[in-house]
Image (tube, rainbow, N blue to C red; front, side, top):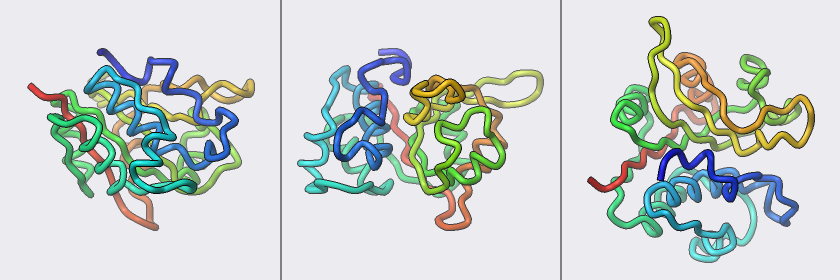
Length: 182
């Protein structure tokens, strides 16, 4: 499977379900599992397995989900942007916690919700040099094009912008790096 961000079954996050507003980390785990296994695991199944019927989850729970549903994948937790970029260079899928207030203040053109200012999970995929700058594909499950000023899911962002979004003053860098089995 190529880029999991492009599979329409993973999006949108705000699908009308009772837990949709808190499903961002589940959606990113879902995309990583799909990328590794080719199987789409439902949000309800993941919530049931974790025994989390409502609310959001952190990166430790994301790691547990991917390890459980994608056995054989290499899964690592990191607090280092250097390690994130090393993983991206090796073709990994990275799920990271971001400060969405920072995104809205600094990257409003790719924001999926201009009023949201809390923590959020999104995915990074690929590492691409463009004119002496490094970019990655940024997948935001809030970017579901539900309003005219909301982008549609995938944007290319500069490394320094991705680093700024990940380096939340509240929690620092938190990311899960997922690599397919060889």
